[in-house]
Length: 513
Image (tube, rainbow, N blue to C red):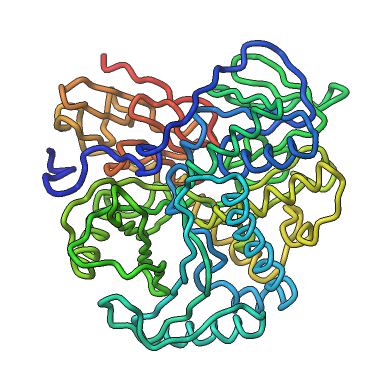
């Protein structure tokens, strides 16, 4: 182990429990031009659920996935299936009004019930269980906020309860419980939906990166990086960050945040239930069955992508919390996740712009993608089928609420500008020879900034640190060994290849000589 990644209980490589315990089918890349009714870009919970719903309605569907199915945000989730999304309902009542706040709850509650019911109908072995969801406060400030949130629950008719204690050894100052929520193994659930899509004649292509949409043709035509074309009646971007913008200015209306997860065997018995701290930094707890015992997922410590302290320290913070609350026998897995935030915290789901009604998007789930992604899939399927949906206006990407959107828009883009300028004028004080094995850093090479990573054998990977999206400078992510952009959340592996968009092109290679 290196100084950057010290020896300890922590697994050396990040790997989600879900991917390690699910047998997923693989699919070939798209190798020819093709045509379909609906082309869906992105093979996560939204893309797969949308394809499942549309295939049941008789539409011919095709999913295009840049990497492997369920290896993005869905494969790295905590997989809480709940409408309790942090301190949100009081805020929504204040900013959006009681009617829209209630619609948001109803959309996510219906999504929870859909997952619960579909698991039963298809007899999916995905460890779905009904659990109460607790949100607790440890400070006086957040205790007041918890009380306001509970008041909002009562206004909206949410089945809930306020309690003074929780069944964990944490000194709390109150908690609000949202009753009968859920948790599951997301990949086992979605694998069953993939099987149903294939049975219905749907097509799935992996290692197929969509880069643009040609609108000069009679039908929208998706163009892939390899030059193949997919003509369709509807093109749907479920690709986390929309792979096309079409002047929706999503790069200015979304920001990316990362969060961290440890999966541990605990010394103390876990009481069941799902827990989430209102205070910052957030802490989240749930369990999942593993070989007859409870594997506890400890998550939180979110921050803007590419910004803040060494990412490994976020894992350490969660380890310290786990030791204090439950005692850690063994850390079985560690991984991180990335999610997008909209200006008003409500996802963007619907036409990419008001004038392009056959190009649809779904993004901005704010770390609550299991229900928001499922709700988005229902809305997308209804839009394609020209069926009315009560949540269309709520989720419309073309909406704009002056409060809080103007303030968030300005703050977000001032932050982007600051990082853009800071990255350009920052001079690295390290050289390639200063970097140890299995370490990464910004270095100077021939008088210019470069990103250097040396693997465990001392082999050198050098990349240009200028993000290929909009020219910001990437930063080293020690916890996940990646180059992350602090402006719009693009991520690249040690060799410069894209891990997550909005960037579409790899970082340029840099020659040492």
